[in-house]
Image (cartoon, rainbow, N blue to C red; front, top):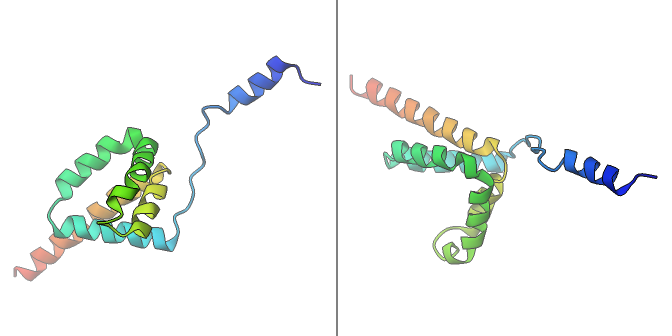
Length: 118
């Protein structure tokens, strides 16, 4: 039988464990694509990337803040997409995927501008 101290040590070993990455669903990726497209179309890539990079250390806290504000934002934004985004932010890799998607769409927009200008 384990002593209380051994039980405490066993629990403490995993107290700060980081969750394993979870693959995003097709709907999640589609939502990230729409968000990235909206950012790039509005020419807000720089401010969006600055915001996302600054939120990276507070990824989980940011998701919880979004869930807290859901009743207020629900009258303006689709609550289904809003809740999905808040849930995605709980996972560390979601911000990097969003950043990569914004950068890819910005690059493709820049490439199409170069080709269209000839």
